[in-house]
Length: 272
Image 1 (cartoon, one colour):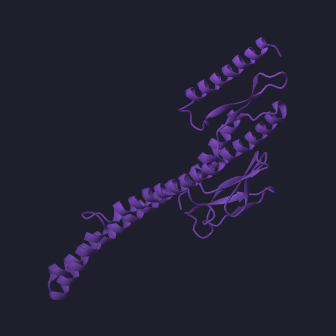
Image 2 (image 1 turned 90 degrees about the vertical axis):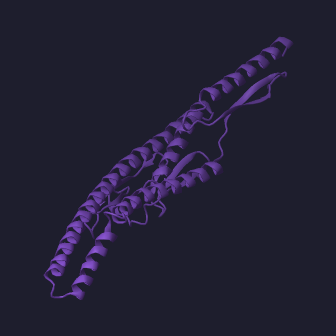
């Protein structure tokens, strides 16, 4: 290799490095993008320099820790949103349960002090009617809340099914891309990792990386959602013990629907 070729190889390598840096800058706010680094090496024949690879700066351990934290954070936010609604309903100092109960028991004390007083008797009846009416109102609110939760479960199941199907599809695309070019398809890898991250925000999952390339995803009890290029679906179904409660079923490879224990699906945005 002559001096001209050596210099040209250096220019080409520098251009590739600049393109990589430009791509990093352009995608700094792109969700799921991982910074890339041009790996340079010695030319094969006669010296010079060449680009061995465009390496994606991705740390599996850090990603796992981040996904786990997202699962816990989403779970706490979901729990807070649900509990705060109930707390605001029942613990209100003016319209909650406590002032109603206090008023009812105060009327009973008045009646106990003056059992023959018609006004005291009427006061107890009035407080009892108010209390029972408010209980019915609370019950209606909680029933509506349960209906909303059932709707959220159905929506979450739909989103989870769509995501696991896309991850299985990306497993296939990534495998084909590696076979064609022999290089890692960084864009597809970013998409897949971003989808796994989004999935962890929705529920607690287990990720197993087969041969360092293919993503297999399963529920905490071991039932698979993604195995290679295959995906398995969840379904929102009616609970046997409570027809007003929606739980999750799992459709296995044989097409059988198995109702999952409610402790199986948890974490993330999941609503218990």
